[in-house]
Image (tube, rainbow over all chains, first blue to last red; front, top):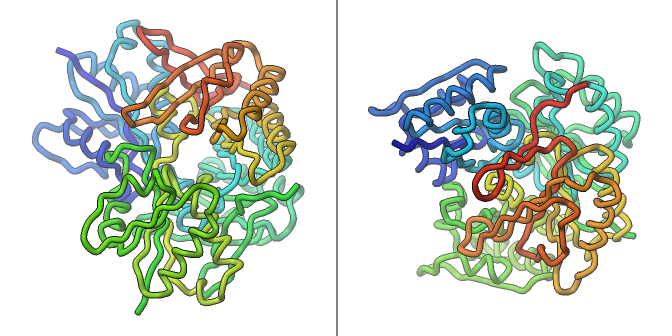
Length: 250
Length: 250
C-alpha cells in the first residue's frame, strides 16, 4: 500500500488560474489538508475527505498529511498561490527533516501555482519586468530587524519588491515601519501597488505614490508591490499601467 | 471594430502547467505573436494566424501585435513562463508608452503563468520558501556592474536567488563571473540547483554545492537557484530535497 503526498498551489483565487496538473491531483486525492479558507475552495465529492485546520499550525498539519500518506492515502496539501512561496511546501519539508526516517521515502511532489505577486503584477501591468525580490513582512518566524535590513538592501539593489503578508490584526505596526524605511530611502513618487484578493469578487487594485501610502491600504489578503527607481506609469483612463522597463542604461 | 491584446504566459513547457485562463485566450485568438520556440507550442487551427519572430526583436514584435489589435484583431502575445518576469509584458508596455496615443486605449490584459523559478523550485523541494530575489544575468539591456552589485547585495541580504538567463553562446563569461562572486561571499556548501527545461522531455535537475558549480552546467534553458545561508538538504535515495525553512532565529 503506497500512499503519496502532493503539495499543490491553488493560485490566487479564481478556478481559471488553477493549473490542470493541480486539478488532476485534486481529482485523484483521497484526502485534502490545509488552512480553512483554502480547503473551502475544494469541491466535496464521495471518496474525498477534507481536513481543514487553523492558521499557525503548519507543522502539525504537515505531520498529519505525512502520517496519512504513510498509511497509503493519496493526500493533497493545498496552499493558495504557489506552495513554495511563503506557504506549505517548506513546512512539509521541515516536518520531513525532523520526522521519522520513513517519511523521506514517501512519494512527495510539489505542484507549482500562480503566486500572488505574479497575479498582482499582471493586473497592474509589468512592475516585476526587471530584477525583483519577494519579502514576507510577517515577523512571526523571523526577527523584525532582519526584515528592515532586507528592505534597506533591496532599495540599495534597486529591486522592485513584492511584500507578502504586509499587515494583520496581530501585527498592525510592521507595515507602517516598512513604509517609513521606504519613504526614507526612495523618491516620493515611487509607485506602490496594493493588490487585494486578485481574481476574486473582492479584487481591488490601487496604485499610489509612496508618500500617499497609508498602512490601512493593506491587510492579509493584500500583496504590495513597490516599484524600482526605473518603474514607469502610463497614464490612461482609469488606473494607470505600471511597468518596469527591461533596460537600465549604463 | 474593437480588437484586443492579451500577453499570456505558457508556463515552463508542459501543457498541464498552462492555466485554463490562458487556454481560453488562445482559443479566442485570431493572431498569436511570439518568439519562434514559444509560437511552436501553439496548435494550428482554422482562423488562427501564427506570427513567429526571432529573439531580440521584442519591441518590433510588440508594435506588430499592437497594430493588429488596433485593426480589430484578437491578438495573443505568448511568452514562456510568466509574461511579466523577464518576458514580453514589459516590452509591450514600453512600446505603448512610446507609441501612438490610441494604443493606450486598447483592451490590453496580462495573463500570468508559472514562471521558471517556481517550476524549478517545486521540483527541487522548497528552496524559495523564505525571502528571495530574481535576477536576470543577461547584460544585453543593463550594465554588468549592476548585476554584480545586485548579486553582492542579495548575498548580504541572505536572499535565496533565482538566476534567469544565466548563460548563452553570445555571453559565455558572465555566469562564470557570477559564480566567482558567490564563491567569494558564501560558504562552500551553499546548495545550488541547476534546473533545465523543467516539465519537458529534456528536464534535468542537478543539486551541486557552490564549490562544485561549473559554468557549463547552465545554458539558456536553465534557471539556477542559489540557496540562502539557511537552506537545507534532506538526503534520500536519488536527488536530495532542498528547502529553505520559514524560520530564522534571532
